[in-house]
Length: 186
Image (cartoon, rainbow, N blue to C red; front, side, top):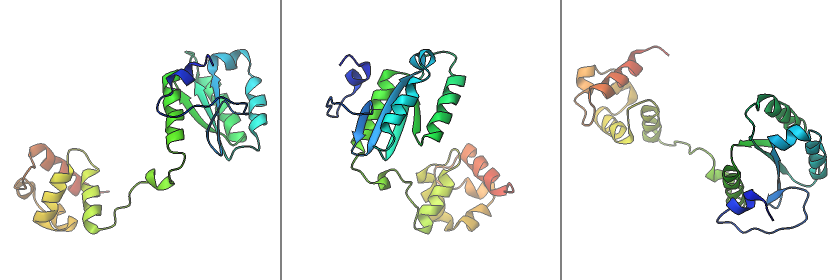
């Protein structure tokens, strides 16, 4: 009840109960919380907690509160423990950040993985726009203007900087960036 993480959780319902995990954010998802300060004082503690969760959750997450200045060795050790015990690891720097992770897990509990997947660019136009905007400086409007004026990537990449400068919205910096990208070998 005095848990500072629980106080920071907003926009999702909370229920206190006797469960093997510190937080249950889905039917099959259990989360363990571990402060590095506590881990340094009681390094054996996490092993017992992991053992209690062993066959209960499909997804087991270890959220580590990084509340010490020299954290590298402890994080390395806990990462090894997590890998061996099939836990996912999240490192957070504050109780508010941990609360945000827990809230997000809970909010996405019933959503499909499709919401997290990258959108696949189906059409040539979509692919062209994606390629052109993946570098610096060129935005979607510039990509549309380039595609409408030159039609294809091959056509626009063969153009001189002077011709590219004639495209609406392209200034010297964008033209130089495009010309460099088009003329450098892969």
